[in-house]
Image 1 (tube, one colour):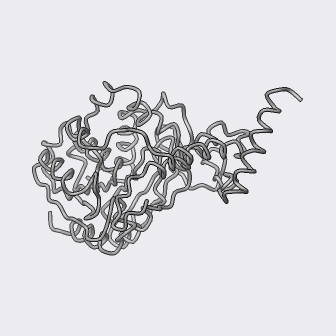
Image 2 (tube, helix red, strand yellow):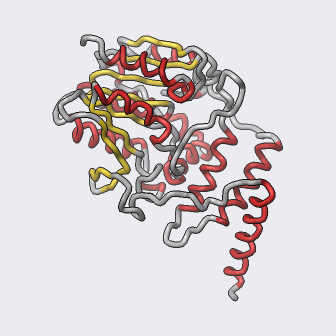
Image 3 (cartoon, one colour):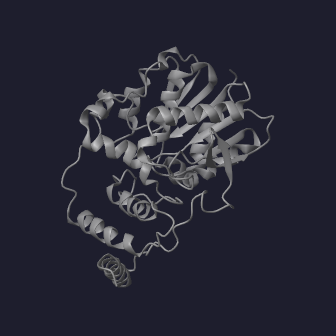
Length: 328
């Protein structure tokens, strides 16, 4: 047996043993992306098959929902499909994320994200302005898109965007020693990845590794102090590497990111949402963001943290529905 194959076999055996002792997942349930599973619902735009779904009737006003991350997917936001009684609601996994096909990180950038969103706006809007709703990273994208295409956006919902420029980035926690619990979790996740079957899917193991590690670094922005648990299909390592990964290794790149350029030209209404118990991206951070928009308001969702659509789904939904239903 070649040395490389023996090394891989030993790692997979050790990973399985660790998981047997600790009760962790071996990654056997890691779902296939659209390029490997023909049953995944897709919309093809710009020559790329996005994992995407629409809910509602085509003659209703269009609402596009943008998930967080970077590298997450829209599964945790699917409760918003309840808005389909009044809107044509579109969800999609961003390029290189969720169940959308994987591409090299070098092919992903803020410009490519915004070009993809523009293609969806034209596809679903059919010449009409659309509503945008983004959460966390998705809210940052929605803000940047509105700055570039203010005439294509009707109403804007920004739920806890992390930062919009270098000034607001400075208010987010900086990295440091994560502690022994996180360090052990990282080591265990590194071992787990070798139990993932990666034949024909070169991104599978790194996607699994990212998905296992992401919860370890979640700040407990919840009212009970626990790390939030949200549903997702599959983490997208190329999307993470192209954004957060690059920011971690290139301070100049991080400082250059601007998600608010041009938003002062947007004349439509903007709703900021903050979780009452969100400590890093809550009310104080959202008030900093609001200053860049002409017509912005803030609603704080009681007894909710950063994942307000999951922690307080009914209250969050009512706030969004009321805002979108106001006369223009």
